[in-house]
Image 1 (cartoon, helix red, strand yellow):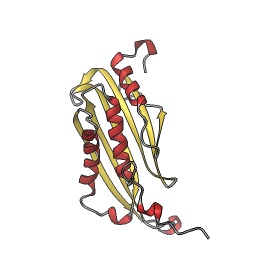
Image 2 (spheres, rainbow, N blue to C red):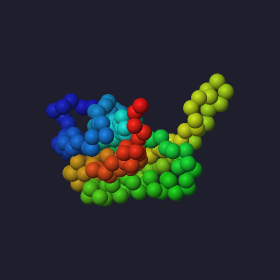
Image 3 (cartoon, helix red, strand yellow):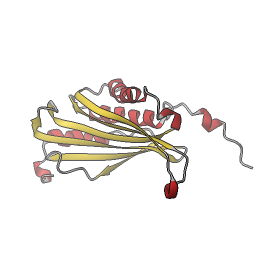
Image 4 (cartoon, rainbow, N blue to C red):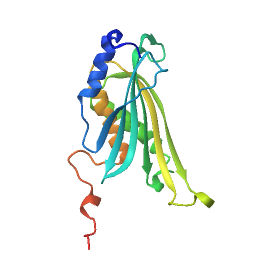
Length: 190
């Protein structure tokens, strides 16, 4: 990254917008080292999503800025994300899961009025079973969402809130203010 005095205002404002919002308490955000080879200026956040004290999803949100712009980006700023979550094994084979997972992102961005263009990405669902020397826990299933989009407004808080909502949906968190039935029906301690 260039020296602080040379950082463009548009990038500085975008970073400030991503730092200004705080998500729901189950999502822990942390600034991390950003990739340096993707664009002249970059900033990155990692997220850990907790449910009942256990990590159920994680993600990274990277802000890229190239003052020269990119034709594919249709602008000079780009947001890039990778979100992963462990699923219940019966969901891993659901043929509708990729399309539903994609709408978790687009609906969340739209709900927060995060204006964007040139959105694209992939959704991958996998199921793993361990054998032999690696035998261990029951089969696992995972979901991975990779996406990028070009923000069209200066409201980067809206993009962060939308991204956090997508993380919450991916992790299976109930909407804010609603508790899960599982949280209320635990067996009493003996």
